[in-house]
Length: 291
Image (cartoon, rainbow, N blue to C red; front, side, top):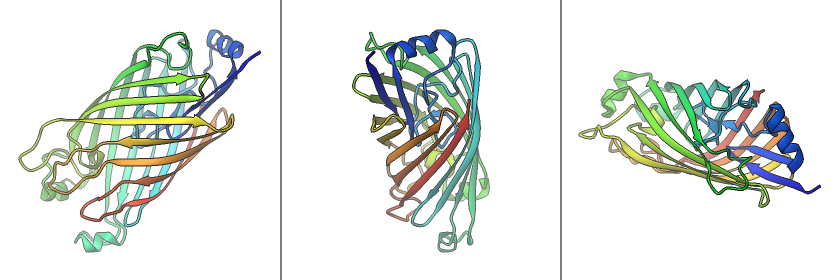
């Protein structure tokens, strides 16, 4: 029987199974290894910094799945932390939550905010699959397509207003498409996001004379190196609302599936310039447990 493998990034998803087994699991309920994706920095199922169309959890159309995650990014001058949880319902609807913290560390003194001044944000998300199946629709070029929204509310409203942000809360809207090519062990993802967020919302929403939505792109690609080990890249464009240069984000990642319920993702990230401090590069580590 011919073996088929594919890598599902998200900052780490790996799929490896025989074709007959895939069809059996689809009928009996239960997705293939790590086809729930990982949790991105905003809590949704997908990549580390990019949005995917996949629904989190191992449920199929008759069940419910869930996961929890913790993520840390150490940059040259800052530190980012996030944790949260997500629920997938009948492989159709996803509900997610993430709490983010952006620690200025010693850089806070240089910014006039004080050492270890921390911006934080809560992100509440919902995603609905509209059509397609990224894994099982191998006889079609049509990808899995989902739409979603994320309500974000940031702390430190006084500081954000001083920086020029119009608001400390806002809603992002997105459309995402994901496709797995089993024979090529390849997964491709793309998303379009409508947003007003500054640094994904941690620095508020909108800016001086500019409170309009911007259309931004998120993309990722991954290859399977072994049946449990994947590697790939991600890219995410960003708006510039505050008059502070906000560079696009990118990363190169590796992901390892310890088993069906636990995965770990590591990456080298380049977040560019943040609050006038350039070359914000560093390490990314994320752990996810779920069912």
